Length: 195
Image (cartoon, rainbow, N blue to C red; front, side):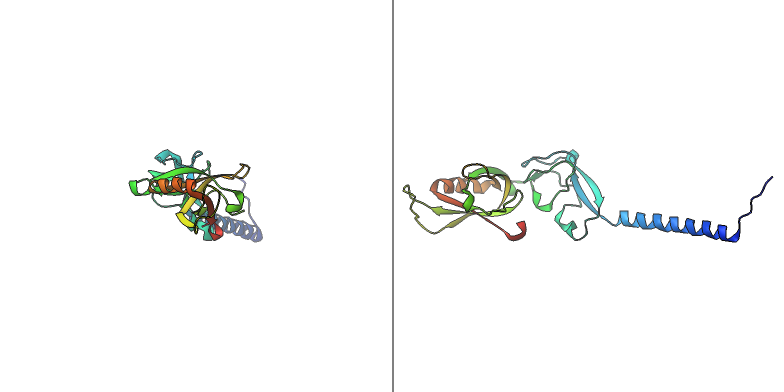
């Protein structure tokens, strides 16, 4: 039988390649296991969807300092989406609320003139809604009053004549907001950095 002898330099090269491969695989596995676990949508989830067990899957991803902006941990079942979430999208922590009587949310459509809302307003952004009381002759009847705090913008149509905006509000805020739409001009006031 033929025995092949390796030179000492060939043997050292083989050992170096083997060690290098083992180190590379180890580093890859460490990097893969050090990411954050975040919930990801398995299908398109329109605003107002009550989440069920099949709507989300847990994925390990490397998000660095932005990881806290996304939901991880226990499955958020029986929660309601505040904004549209697309299939494969990570679940932002501000995009859902617990589905209970104290946090029941409703989606309301508002007509807000474009110069009465931030130019850079985006879906998912929190806004405060103010009303300026007006007479039937369009005279200002008082100072602006806050109607709703931290409503979430769920859709936005800048092409509409008076700016079509849908917002998610708590169920107990609906009547005062409807009354405010009849009483005067509405203003949407955003928060810096989309908070």
